[in-house]
Length: 337
Image (cartoon, rainbow, N blue to C red; front, side, top):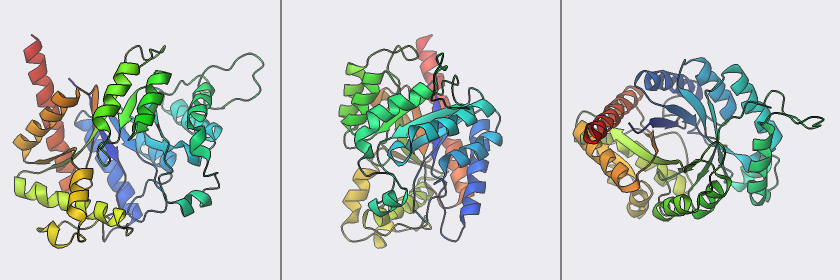
């Protein structure tokens, strides 16, 4: 079976609060654990009134303490915003409290606008240091050497799994060079997906922990008991993305029956391209759509996300998606026998 996971931005729906969003995140994580999801990742964004996961390690701590088995991690931590030692200590603490359940996905983008990046008190040139910062960060998770003066405590010896996240060839090349697993942000920036996957697999250099490349595909899922309702659920994400790209981010909009009537002029083509790695529909359509993505990209794992305004509908969407992925795994197992 191909492992399937959840990417959650802790969305704040219109009419709700950040507290509601964080309660919903834990509820969804428990739901995902019961449904057989492999990981539950949270993403770092700042100065976004529609996202409650800005303090990502804190939210990870909340989720991992409220679940029992599912792996919990970042998808991702935007490393240019932080000193590597600080992240090593934070995730080393998480891994010490919850052994073998913590993942650390790292991104190179700031996850915000330039004004907010400055407010984070980090140099705007830090993205140029990303490869060296990744290597430094990983070194803190290794057992300390004799007489080592700079150490992450907690952190040393935890060997927290590190992933590279990206939406371009840069991340693919770095992950391959370092022998690390790679997750592509195809759920919102799929333009370089095909080339990035090929580059990663062809240039991968085996490492101690990863003798083979390991690629995770990100996809949006908007699933419901009927096609019409799934299309309606998707309208919240379509509106949110159009708002973000036109400089008007905000809480996750309510679903509408006719999204084209409320999208900004000229936004439809942009939204369709950004969200083209998506599956929308009833249980049969979702299964077929996920099967097509798996067949085309041959991922080692699939991570699913879905910005849905109504929490109950969001839970149901991930339930349908889990059923579809489990069914795909059963089909593959039968074919191999």
